[in-house]
Amino acid sequence: MARVLIADDDADYRAAFSKGLNALGHEVDAVSEGAQVEKAVTEADRPYDILFLDVMMPAGGAATVLHRMTVIVPDLPVVIITGRAEVADSPLFKHGMRLARARVRKTADLKELDALVRSLTAE
Image (cartoon, rainbow, N blue to C red; front, side, top):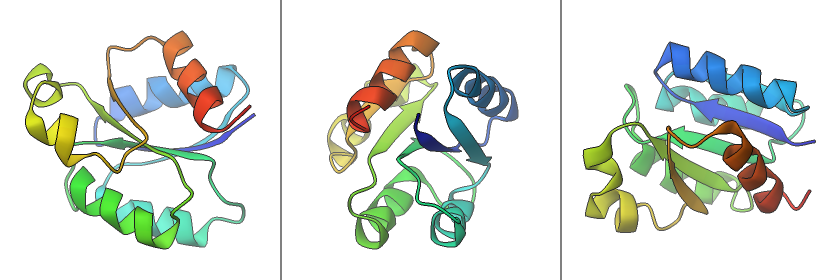
């Protein structure tokens, strides 16, 4: 199973997403701010297989974190997530996050997210 890092400032979503992926056998860590992502990735005892990154978070939004991750860990698949329809339909989400391997809405069900994890981590 995959080792997953979730970066999202919505505590309820972060907890539910983590719990769901854990139930499917994935190992999950989670942070609440963009600034915590780099620390989690660089200080991890084992590398992460995939990063789910919320578009809008305090202390470092997705664009900054995404670009930083492509430098630090270029092989780490990053999936951009958002719960806001206006963001999901925006050029920023569709084109500005082109370095991300995928972009999904938070309304995606757990089965879809698990399939995405498996496809991007070649499980």
